[in-house]
Image 1 (tube, rainbow, N blue to C red):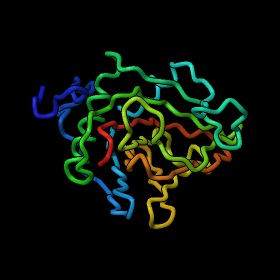
Image 2 (cartoon, rainbow, N blue to C red):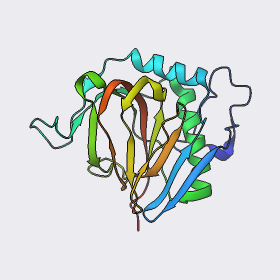
Image 3 (cartoon, helix red, strand yellow):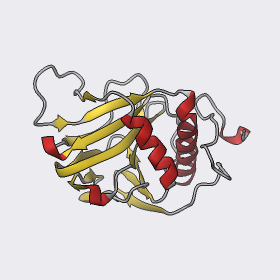
Image 4 (tube, helix red, strand yellow):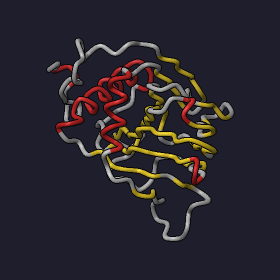
Amino acid sequence: MDEGICGPYFCGLPPPGSPNPNEIPMTMDALDAPAGWVVGWRNAFTPRELDAIEAYGDSLEPVKAEIAGRKDNTDHLRITRVAWMDRVPQIEWLYAKLERAVLEMNSRLYKYDLYGLVENFQYTVYHGSEGGHYGWHCDTGKTGDPRKISLTLQLSEPSAYEGGDLLLEAGAGPTCAHRARGTLVAFPSYVLHRVTPVTSGVRKSLVAWVSGPVFR
């Protein structure tokens, strides 16, 4: 294990079948927006890895997502199916690879003080049959450790669904995130973002958050 990437949360095993697990191809598009860096890392994961993530996510039991602090019907704000991916041996490689990606982006761009991937990953599914969507929101709020970087990994092919665009408002007008399968999108967790209604098909993604000390 590379001691240079090992910390309280930055430890893990290589992904299965990877000849060089520490090598992540650098096809990164970075927008220096007023509210912070918005990153689209194309081909961050291989098709085989994406298939493995999707198969594992599909094996879990999804539940209808709720909005923290709300007990009323919030379908006008969000219709999403989610399952939580604990850090278990079967997907240790996934946690490790995302951690390496976070370290790379943070060293190049964000330069935040970080704890790591403290929360479990969220496997997120938007169904066109129910108009899956998520209105404007930010990812900060009442969490145990402050969220500082939000991550979305695109798991579905763009042709698999209509609508379902991830839009970000980072101070330069709405920015549409890359839709290509395997793209890792990163942005500061305080940035407003939404997923437009899926009108047909199914959109799948993996969502994660990087935590750290409160901004000063």
